[in-house]
Image 1 (cartoon, rainbow, N blue to C red):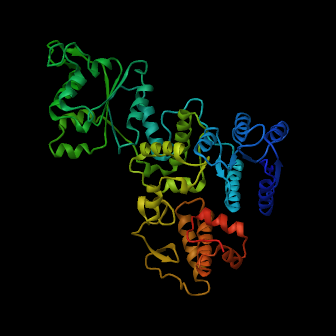
Image 2 (image 1 turned 90 degrees about the horizontal axis):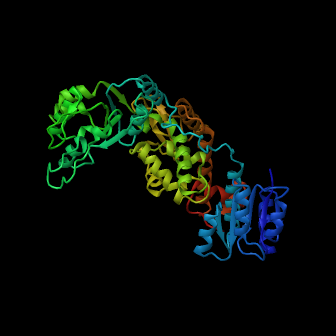
Length: 508
């Protein structure tokens, strides 16, 4: 591993950081000014660069700009005694990994450098997006079925009804159906029937003649005319007013329509694709949707799975949206830590892919550093998750889809660990010498049976958290004393407390 470079004109800062990192078995190299560091970059590079912002000659921001132009993946931590907003903004706009203001806590500085080190050592194969991004992303079996259906329908003009929850990507599927059809070179026109007032929807669909109603000063082509020889996508078709359903049925039946106020029939050569998140069968039973129109639209039904049904796609979607968001803002794409990705995979996300995309936009703008941890996510997500089984995840952060079903298993809570047991099986005696090991084995067995991949990491973090919390309770929150009792170093317990989000610790 390459050394960590410390660039600061203050010799005491270089000495303190160097000693602290040496205790962590991390090699360092120090420079008293940016000029010497720039010269050294011609024949070597660091693993992480830590630089003061204001030094004689070239500033830390000058060094940051040069490093990011030559080595964009190298994490740079900016240190300054001038902790003003302008410096912080300039550092982040220049691509700094993080901003640390003097005077700083040495343990926190080491923790920050370790985090940057993890970022630097992370696989360089972070997806930057292929040259041509596919219109729909998904590797889950449910999405493969959708892709197969699109392929089978590609050369057909048949009417398609796309169903699925809001935010699952129904318009993307409609566009894919058009793109791979013989009509691909012709217009694709989309209209959300729920977003248009009832009085205007008829004119939007079929157009109007001049003078047809107050304000109709010119003849206007409707969406059917605009989509001639192409595809018309009608989203939220379940919300279409009943009287307009009759007119739509007529167009689908004989291919003709009239503009509002018109007397000349217009011929429509249009492929119609519709979509809804509603249960159309129930709306037919309730008398809100014409049964004959329902059968006319429901020639081929294509159901899109919710994100809960394709959790394995969340990592690739997250990476895609982070790259996409970063490109729009002209910044480097953020990366999700394994723990943060695991956390996201356990959320319900009722807004589906749309909600996930919005979350990635938030992360790009608001999350500190380039690698995003669970603590960097919006509070409303992490607080709900911390409250138990909110958002469909267990209190261990295990997605609900990976847990045993409650109808088949019972749960036993023991010292903050939820263990699933087969119904009718008595739990081991927790007070016995091997009781906690038996509980641990049961928990591991349940997670492995559920298909979870990072069992060692999840249970290891829980084990460390339980030990440190118990030690802190025993020492009344004194972390240095707790470190001695546990037989670990002071820097180690400080780092673990931060990583595990443990509260209540204090310096001795």
